[in-house]
Every structure is written in C-alpha cells, then in structure tokens.
Length: 116
Length: 298
Image (cartoon, rainbow over all chains, first blue to last red; front, top):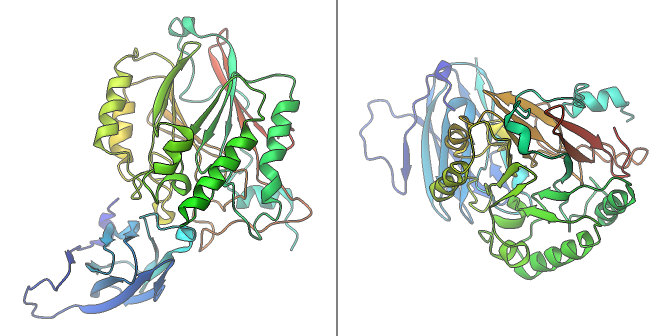
C-alpha cells in the first residue's frame, strides 16, 4: 500500500549501483539481512532527507517491506537491493522481512525513524 | 506481572467482541439458502506442533487436550478444519516430516466424520509445500457440504505469501460453479486483506483475490496466522481469524515487536481456543461460538 502523504520515491536496483549521475547523491545507509535480523535494526533519517537503503543479504533470500512508505524489495541470497526513500513526515515506521525464512522469521523486523 | 482479563482482552485486541449471533456480511439469503441443511463445523488453527519455548511450556500437551475436549463434546461437528501452521517450521526436512507424522497421529484420534487441512507458512513455505503434500494432500481444494461451497486457498507455499495467478484462475473456475447468492466459505491461512502488513499479516496478492470474491453476496472468509480473533468486514465480505492453539500474539501494532504474549502460569491457556461455525437453515443465520482448550464456551 502506498501512502501518498509521505511522497516516497522508490528506486530499486539489484547488484551494482544505479549508474545514474546525481548532482547531490543521497546518503546511503547499509542494512545487512540474515536469519533472523536486520542490522542495524533501527535506521534514522531526517524529515525530507533523501536516502538510499542498501540491503545486503548475508545468507538466503529475504524480503524488505516498509508498508507505510510504500516500499518493498526482494533481497537476493548473497546479493544487494537498493531502495530510495524520502520521508516527508516524522515518525516511526516498522519494516519486516516478508519472505518466509524459517523459525525466527517473525522476529526479523526493524524500525525506520524519521526525525523531525 | 499480573494481567487481568480486561487487560488481556485489550492486549489481544478482542475488545469485548462477542459473536454469538448472525454475522454481518454472512447470512443465508432467503430463498437461496433453501438447499442448506443445519450443521456445524469446528475451526482449529495454528497448532504449531513441534514448537517448544517459554511462550507455551505445555506445547506438547495443548493439542492433545483440544482433541480430548472435542471428543468429549456431546454435539459432534460434521467436520473439523485446521487452517494452517499445523506444525512449527524447521530447516531440517526429516524433522519437518516427523512433526507432520506426529501431528497426523494425534489428530487421527478426533472422533469426527471428517478432518480437512490447510497449510500455513510454517508447514509449507521452506519447501514449497512438498512435505505437506506428502502428508496432507493438495495445497488447495474445494468441497461442497450440505449446500455450502467451501474453498480452501493456499497463500503460504509461495514464501512471498502470494496465492498466484494459476490458483486464482482455479478459484474463478470454482466460483463459476456457484450462484452469486450461494453460501460460500473461503478458508485460508493468512488474511486476504492488509490486516497489518508491517508484521506481514497480509497476502501479497490479496487484493486480486478479494476482487474475484467480491461479486458473491454471501461469502465469508475464515483464516488463522495471527493467533487471535479478528473480525473485519470489507465490502460485503466478512473475514474472521481464529485463535491459536499454541500461544497468542498481541493485537496488530499494539507493541513494537510481534512477539508472543508472555506465558502466565496462573492462566496457562489464556488466549488459546477454537471456534464453532454453525449454519442454521431455518433462520438463515451463521453463528460463531468460541471455545477454550478445555471445550468451555468463552
């Protein structure tokens, strides 16, 4: 579900970088995913800040779902996915793995915190 | 910490909801329910056989206790349906099969005419339903019972939690056999709507599925997955989740993490139970009754 209130921009690329030249490149936040945790599990950005979440799987295929910002991605086994996020509203927005990955899948959650 | 019943109800998101009468969105249409006979079935869910841990130190006894409770009841259901997560998942294929074999042996003691099974993600996601099919048969199925069409959907053998276009085409063909006013029950494990996708309480292509269901005027969905009752009517479709038989989970979004509600030795089976669904042809009503693991009405 996409919440238009957040004005989210989403870009997804698997493998190498987007290749697009950026005048003001977004801050890249690396998040590793492995059974059954994201690290870091809490990510902070400022309201209005454009960031790229670089998701790296250290083991098997995982998912990344951030419903309130309309973001989801597959994170391939041993690979990388990138999602670009600009949150225009402060708050705490939970994310979770949505590819069932085993006993502990339910614990694989995190929080994106948009500071005012 | 002691939690009284009112606090527990709030924590579990029950909020005093009691459904003992006709359900919104689900009645047998006058004239169209003529072919329906009186009967009831039981919905049992999320037994997670093989689970062990602090959320339920009695995990090896709870399922057996429920089997005894069902057998002790004077009124016998026409059938029992398990709406998924029969077993607790494991990466060990041999252990998965062992748990399924044990589960089947335990529920084979149910003194009821028929038992139906649905897979949950714990049963079927890691091997795309291979072991499940060896033990329980088809991942999705339909059957007719006393004038009511039942359709059991699989939204778990795809690890992404989707039903998939092939099964949706099958669903369309099954629904095409029914009148738009016919009583229809859809059984699933995961909710077909975005109940709380932040905790993966959704079906990836649920909107596509519900758009196929929506034209049917007397269709109700019963599901599991979230380990608590939840009653929601969207459009004309009523969706009802069942309690678990292993541990309760908190109400959606009520706590930061979707971790089991802590075990209370003073109330060892709190938040656990099963459901009776009764079809009353004369009054054109369908009633829900909830029972605890000892078979007492709650």
